[in-house]
Length: 133
Image: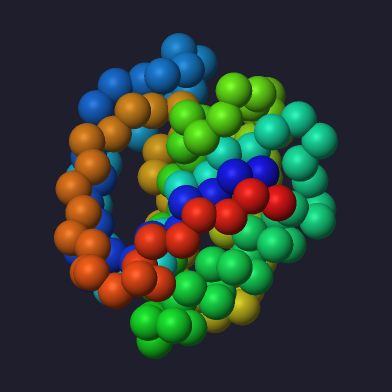
């Protein structure tokens, strides 16, 4: 798993078009303030241990900025090998469920869609962290 962790003072996404034709329709335009974000790329073999590390690291970034708002965005462009779409979507849903049950407000961008993205990232070095596990 490869993840780009970001902290955004403001993050906006707007559904643009489907990347996976069979993805459910999901037209949204959402803005989230003061959010820790995970741009996630899952690879074959990723599962429970990597999901746990994703959740742990996202909580860590959120704690650095004193927020309970999180954004999960599946970003399959951080590596060449990719987990099959249904498995990747399930992984994101499991991470969302774990974070929600831990008291976080979790927004997940539409899986299987390209989105217009707008971000305001502060200059703090902890606002941009890349991890591979």
